[in-house]
Amino acid sequence: MATITSYKRKYCVAWRMQIRRKGVPFFSKFFESKEKAEEWALANEEKYIANPTEYIKYRYSLKDRRKLEFIRKRKANERRTKGE
Image 1 (tube, one colour):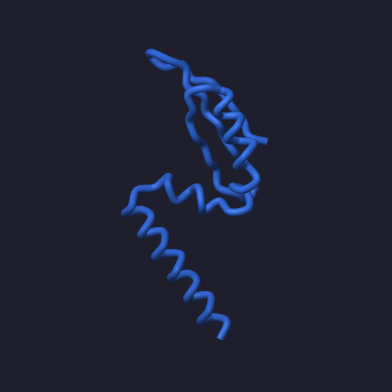
Image 2 (spheres, rainbow, N blue to C red):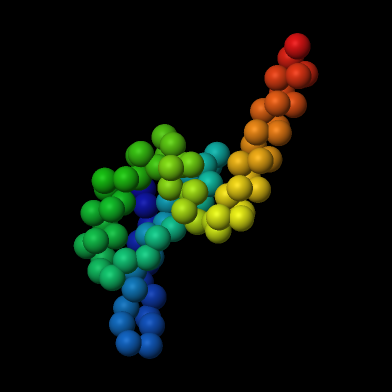
């Protein structure tokens, strides 16, 4: 279940939706209303848990994403060469 909390800002209230599960990277997103946060959580929580990379790739800058992709490929190659 996603957790939704409110944050008071200077001119408005923002709502933060968090998904935290063991074995899955933490994910959070801000919304203008609690209803929008609840709708997004209901529609996307199970999809996120099934495939977190679809959502997490937007959390990092392009440089960080390229570095992470390079590391993933290198580790995959290392696993393949150990198996041979």
